[in-house]
Length: 393
Ligand SMILES: *Cc1c(COP(=O)(O)O)cnc(C)c1O
Ligand SMILES: [Zn+2]
Image (tube, rainbow, N blue to C red; front, side, top):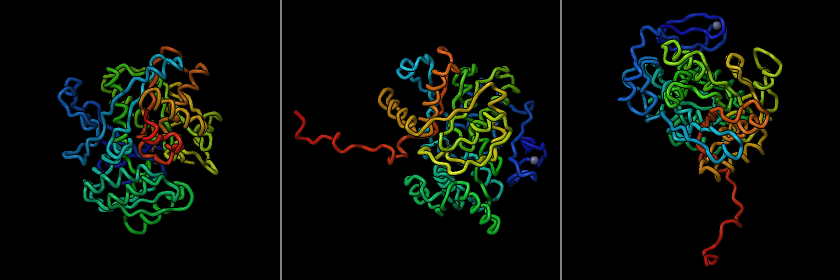
């Protein structure tokens, strides 16, 4: 790691600093010198099966705060693929991470750096899952964690944060409101703010998804990656990871076409993409059952839009009924219980195949960002389908 560089104005800041945004108000990204990365592909064979196997490509740390996050499986979805005429349909199952979502990657990296750089209390706004992840890793590192989330965040997310000993504030409105509350409190109390893209290290954790995808596809990237996009950190992270791998000569110039998937009820990036804009507008009245992508405005929208355009990708919406139906279909046809955000990406794969954006033989990877088990309220059961023992013949 050599420097922190603004993704917008190219302003530079010293590496290893406890810092939030650039002076211009945009996110900072960690930059490495590829000549100084002493990692060879062969080294990976003997490494642990978690995200720290790529530690040379992460802000250098001796003993990370870890619960074994990362190196999640890539699962072929053959039956859905044949139903939908996508011969090579895959899911990267992030639901197997500690705390049940890929937020664990960003939290492990972010908490490790916050601890090492001297933070005592970290504070963040969350739609739910980031709160659980940062609370868990904060507990493990012995840091205090303050979480603000929408009052209507999933029940599990609230209970999980409390279980890990975090202070939880329920805020009216959306994650954007929770963000305002947290920023102000953090400034007044001297807490280190770690909301989405407000510090440079979460994205380094999430980029490990891209490193893994490259390794798991034997350094021959799939043609399409569909990502349920809220703040877009995972998408920006994968895009960054592929650039870093190219700088090491581990992969070539070709990139997967990135697809940002959003809900019909909250689609600022899709709108900006369609309008040819470089940034999104705040989405009024955001609403969808997929809470992780109910983000009306992202600090990193301009980076997501760049990634989509540079890779020949696109941005699409799906409706809540389409999300629920993809969730049910994947459960029944594949034995895979996706989170609603992952199900949104899956539903989009089907739509884009029908629209011809995806060709039948292309390798298509859906990122399932979390486990369906975190959303019991979406798995409604009609009591009449649960049969009593008398009915057993
Ligand atoms: C946070 C979250 C997302 C969105 O992630 P971003 O990187 O902010 O776009 C998607 N799915 C789940 C389950 C999440 O928790
Ligand atoms: Zn800047």
